Image 1 (cartoon, rainbow, N blue to C red):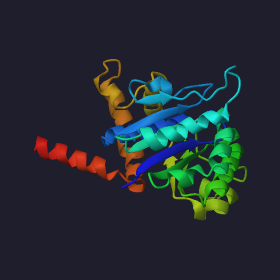
Image 2: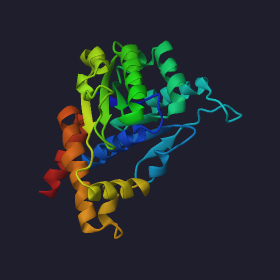
Image 3: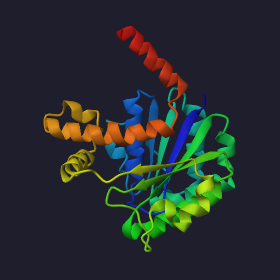
Image 4: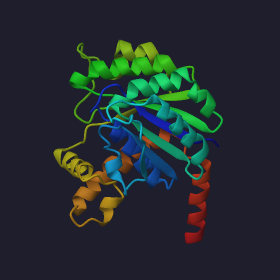
Length: 266
């Protein structure tokens, strides 16, 4: 079975790309999948802040002045994907808003996904967010989908309803919008990140995020009370992970390793 390469993408900053990357990484931890994260945001390495809880590498893509992205440095990133990823089954690349345009242009004009297809099942994870961010994130969804729909990749839309239901100016939910219906045949899946069921669930999740912790790390933390740990578990394991289990494949090598551990413990 191929490895997975997953890129979180949006032209808009602050809409939940890193949250998606953390969810993907936490899902890997939950299933004992070998993975690595790469922080591709030179101006705000928010994913890198989760290290050492998550295995995160940062990449140097700025020019010598540190003011602009040097697209020639994307070559090193591709060589890393091709040559240096050995043991990991999933690679998660968190694309910053400032990285989006030059990276997308590089991937397309150099036919990178064609070069990677033998080694990787490639996933583009696109975020759609509500409110003032909706129009921009819908446009970004259409742009990425139309650009890459025939390029050896699977396109997943994450509907981020953490701050409320996604509805357009006409009151239509996401799957009734003309933007979704324009590209729905090209999509692999839709994942909904639902609003927390209570203010207490929200508070517990926010505390975990602010402290840059994974849901596994809080299990042994005395500053997280028992009920907060239970709320986080219900949100992550019983909600988000269960939805991901129905959509995404667990790499076969990880399944094998997990079954061997179960046999030993039995």
